[in-house]
Length: 358
Image 1 (cartoon, rainbow, N blue to C red):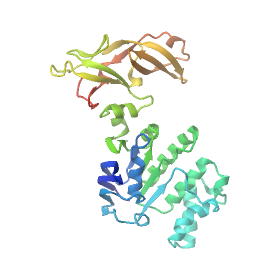
Image 2 (cartoon, rainbow, N blue to C red):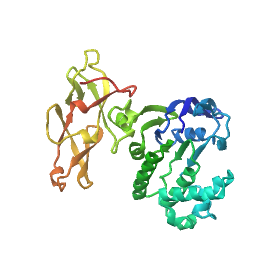
Image 3 (cartoon, rainbow, N blue to C red):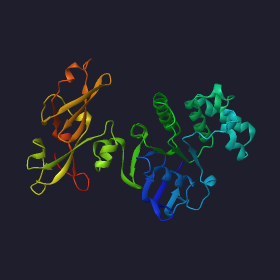
Image 4 (cartoon, rainbow, N blue to C red):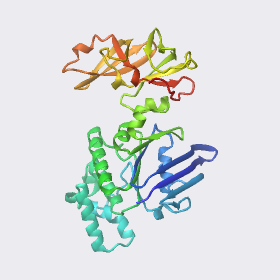
């Protein structure tokens, strides 16, 4: 097993710089997910680790070894692609064995390795089938099997679930997580899906415009986003954000005031963004909460809970609420309550989180 170290990694295409000095340490056996919107540089960063893109500046090390000039085949990595990249004319067993034959592994050892890996992935009954005879989820398991049989130091995943339907994505997420727990191989995973990032990662790296916005565990980023971008990217639905101004007692939002503890005299009058997660809002008043009048637009029932779409001034807000078996009691909601301890405050100009409140 091995760790991966990125020190000041830059990628340029001619005069255009798309990755701006990435610094990241992936520990041995850690599962790190790079997440961000399309075009943020996450796949380019992964491809530089793999050696499929040349590093313009900075240093890459794997297991403490300098890798900038090492060929992809010599980095001891295995990559799982979005489009599976299977050989259509080969059956499952031969697809999984292809790399082992290139390495001239003995035939008996190949057969044993394929059988063991197929057992892990539930592919034993499909070894004689070709990719065209498999479902999308089965093809992705074959692609992972081809990576596993090599016993690499590092697994790289490039949006491996994006071609699957919602149900299969959920199933495959669980399989990938179980597989990592079983094998304990250092893994770097790229996705634009923040749900995948939250459920799979030991640590999440949120990227935007070729830069790292924040690194931390899923709950660290969910509970304490470093800026408005991270707050708005992680969470389903994402954090509500409202324009306001700090006062000596809290924050003024339109004609309403949210009570906060700890606002200093120097901070009073500062323009801010008020952040509150949809899950943290209540319909009934409670200790330490402040009322917020809303104009309800829409109720989306999801079963045991519903999403309330509402407006407050110029802001569109979304809240989660218990349905109690039906949504009749939710259609007349005209006020919600904001708990002071769960409010996040961001500077209106920079978007950076501020230390305000208890």
